[in-house]
Image (cartoon, rainbow, N blue to C red; front, side):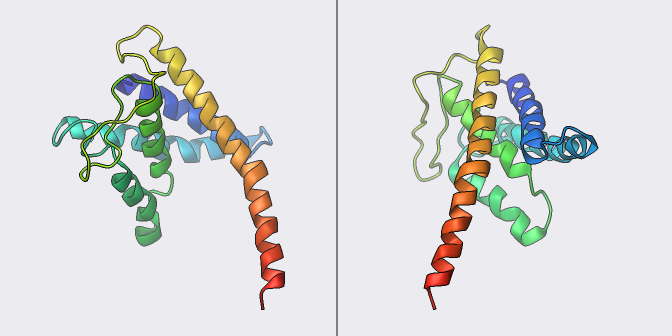
Length: 163
């Protein structure tokens, strides 16, 4: 995907995640969308810094780098939602493009993608971006509403059994 696709994904994702996290469709929903939009958009653009230095789709397009962005808020107390933008950047590059990314760089330089991707210059890239973003929002909602509550119930059940 190109920068336009990554920004479009970040904006639509911020709206969708804001609505999922705060489904009241009032001022609280708008506040959640705004709270997510800037850090998610910055995160969505961050991996392409490797076009200026390093190897594009390798230096900042890998799982060790994502782990750093996910751990950052735990140690420094800021940039809580940037990792979401970074992760969705990776998803778009793996699912939506034909080239893919080097997920395990610097250990391996092999680039991974899914066979459903399209060239970045395709006239259908915006459609693919919207479809991938929609799938991301549905997956997030499914995890939040179905998997997470079940995990909490299971955790409570285990806590009552263990001494």
